[in-house]
Image 1 (cartoon, rainbow, N blue to C red):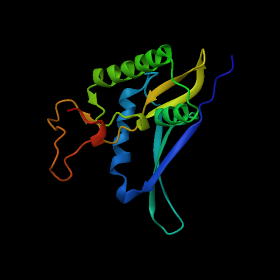
Image 2: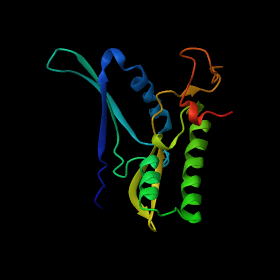
Image 3: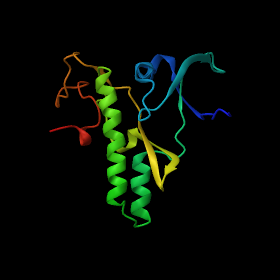
Image 4: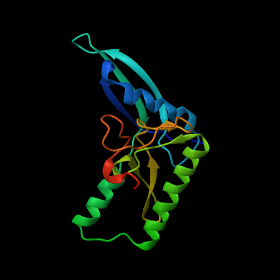
Length: 161
């Protein structure tokens, strides 16, 4: 039996500004869920200017993000069917359920942070939650507050009321 290979994406940043990327290590606690992007590890290397670079290795989503899928549908003037919306919603809710079961809150769920994979099921894509850099452990007692500098978690447009 031939084992399928998974393509990887590398997210990189200057090590001094890598705190958000380093938080994505929580993906190690979310392994095994088919609705959360896979995490393969981290590495630090030195670039040509002797600057340490933090590298995060993740599963590659060849279909881009849900935001891309929505925008492409609008450009082609094709609406998603009710069946597609239901299938995508199911996948997202299963991913969120797993994240919560493992004791985390994502804090930045939006179409740009939901990855699209082209292993289609009857013409529909597989979706996975990604970008856990703003996540919180349940019980950290931090909330989404407006008006206080640096206290916002996530994207205001997608924040709950």
